[in-house]
Structure formats: structure tokens, C-alpha cells
Image (cartoon, rainbow, N blue to C red; front, side):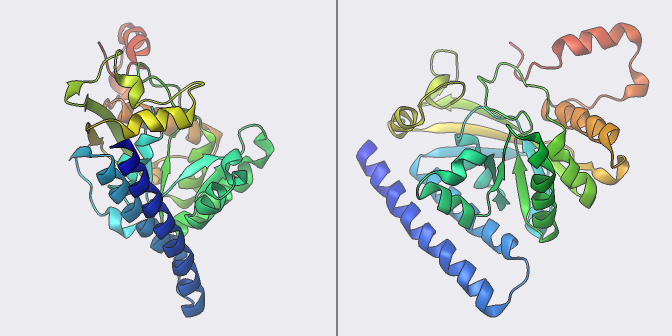
Length: 281
């Protein structure tokens, strides 16, 4: 089964590599606007078929709204590279990845064709150019997927959101769509500490061996909860505004909407203590 899935994946990847290159050529020759909006739809078709190969069943709750229009920023919790497959199969999106991926043979070129936005976390002075690129692609009506935690985790806690990526949606006065991603079952068994690492990928886990194990799974069930949207025009376009926006997005992904005016001092300590628990146990 693994070899069959791997063959299907590689065949699909080669086909879409060629397709993405042809779409770029077609857009250039015809002088079409919104190149990255078109590419985001190619990305969705690829991830949808990849999801089918991996037999990932996804249930979506909440208001998906008019995501086809584009220009939205989708944010979510992050536990694995599988998250991109799940969310990318639902929304037409462009991905954000670490800078190192761009230099990987073949894979780097593939990501460039797919409009991936590369972030150099080691050089903060380059954050401005990253924000500019996100803003440009949002203006071309492409949706951008962000994982504001900045890394994947074991899912036990939601890490504090980095504020820099929120500069782009603030500048564009975009709408942010928070989503909460939960893996419910793996091979028809509830996700637990014992089996979660067959899907979750974090820390120093090796990608190749993990992906090989993933190919051996029969089925995965995931739940995507679309939380209430956040309109960026309510926030100041400065560092304080980014911080407040990041805090509000954090609460939305947790499924909580905290009205500051209604919190008394006694409640604040309780909220702070529980705020990072994504899936309370």
C-alpha cells in the first residue's frame, strides 16, 4: 500500500509541477492579472488530490464565506506538514515556508512555482521584504495561509503568536479567517499520545521516515472549525496594533472571544493560566 501511495504521490507531483509551469507561461503570454490567485487554485487541486491519496477525511464547520474571492489571510494552529494538505484542500491558498526550503533541489523550484512565501527566521532584518511579498500577493486576491506559532508542536499547547506576519494583513486591511484544526482519529482510533506522532510532525523528527509511516496509515479524520473572522481595519497599523491583532487571533483559534471590558482582575489570572491549552484534557 505504501509503494502504491508513493507512486501515486510522485506521479501527481510531476503532473502538477508541469501544470504549474504551464500556467505561469499561459498567464505571461496572455498578460492575465492576479497570477497568484490563479496559482492558488492550482495549489488547492493538488492538495485535494494528495488528501485523497492519503485518505484524509475532513469535516468543516463554521462559515467558509466567500473564500473564492481571495485576499484573505487564513491562520491556524500547527502540528504537522499534514496541516497544509488539509487546509490547502479546502481553501485556494499560497503557503508560507522557511527560507531553507527554497534551496532544496527540485522541491525549492516547485515551491517557487506554487507562490510559496519564504521566511528567514534567522535574519529579522529581512522581515520587511517578507511582509511586502505577502501584501503584494494579497492584493492579487490570493489567500495566504499562516501558522503564526512559527513552528509545529505536539498539539498540547498553542504557542504565542508571532506578530511580524500580521503586518501584511494590517497594511492591506485584509480579513483574517482563524481556523482550528483537530485530528480526530487515526486508522479509526481516537488520536492520543500513543498514536498522534504518526501524523504530528514537530521538533527534531525526520521528515522522510515520518512520511513513510504516514503512507502506511489507512485513514485519518480531521475537523476544521472556521472561527469568526477578524477585520483588520479595526486595528492600528503599528506595533501595538499587531500585538493586539495577534492576541485576538490567538483567542479565536482557541475558540474563545474575550471581551476585555468584561474581564475583572480575578478572572484574568484564570484565563492566562488556561489560554495556551488548545485541547484541554
